[in-house]
Image (tube, rainbow, N blue to C red; front, side, top):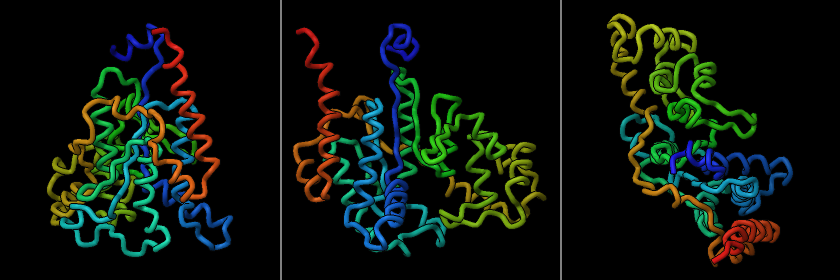
Length: 297
């Protein structure tokens, strides 16, 4: 049933939630240090991410997918030598990368561990697939990464800033960056992205970049004198900033429906010393199952 028909018939709208698991792991790992006096818990960040995803489910999220960087390096490292790598990541944090993927799967959450592509590419691909399904009312991408702003489509595919409690639709993206979502890769190519390791074009800041893109459109359409011999570098940076949307993550959006934990999750909860998390997961599963079991045959 199309989204409009679902609303008219009183059926709950289908909202797909896509989570940047790597970002959330960093956020929880360093957030915990304020309370642990420098003694990192082996699974502290993992438990934090699981609690965040579970909280979404407890608040009514039905379709959830989490993308992670199984390794930090990707195909972009072959394009630009200084692109981000795993160098400098603290061992205590890096040691939680793979357990996070395994624990999420045990909790019954769809997870996409990326190797050749990045987690951002997975989020972009998942957003494209989900938005193409007429049953989906909205796709929420939970990350503050500037790259993902290029995936925003009107108010149907939106970017969510959890800490600021803000939603960015296409209008909000343009208000923030000065350009519409479709021009975000060109914008980042000009201003650079320190987090990803490319510098942008010297002498072009945010205001100038937005002005040039508003006037000419994409970098390809700039008059030769605007960038001069830096045009090739700008086009390379745009390629780095452009997210891939062709990852074959799933075919049917119902593959993202949370149906409860796998049988191995209690073992994971014990391993992580997270008994309360297990109780909450079991309660959430009961609530999910109750409508099904109460239906007449």
